[in-house]
Length: 188
Image (tube, rainbow, N blue to C red; front, side, top):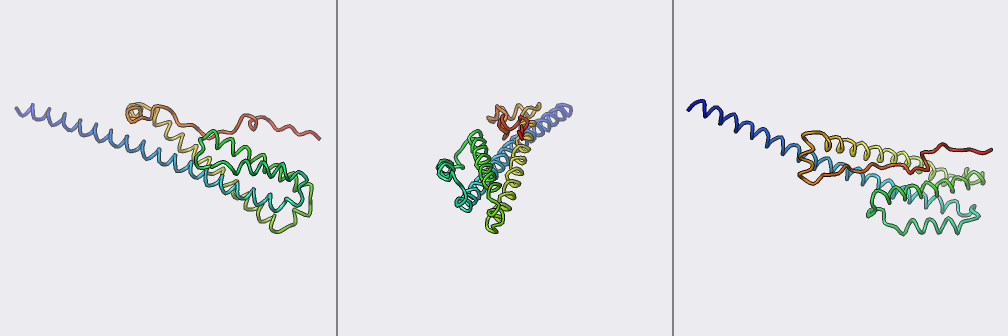
């Protein structure tokens, strides 16, 4: 009789340990998903700030730009999209489009030295550099959170819990487009 109660007590203890582990792991995945979503929101904030700054840079340089209608139409087309509702691939494309537009503005700056000396422009460029750094930090944080989540999701036995609560696929990393992975070719 006592041996039966000891065995029953051990079984109950093992069940309690297993259920506690299951709940802990399930909650860990849910918290980690919230952290991934939060870090993706950080990318949204940085992209919005970057877009606003590029628009202000454009406004401060438009007197110097020969092809302002083309650049203005690019800004208008980018402005028409809502950043908050985009999926990860669309955000990557938007980021790439903003990079391209920023490069165009930088080319204009190089062509017009007077613009480089303008204090408003210099302030906007400094802010733009800060936003770029924040955007890079937000991307790194997002990718770090995705990496931690994906590692736990594929590791046994937590993968069983992940699959049971609907996390059946790895989350996608914020990646650079293929064109930017190639070596830069400079022709002088």
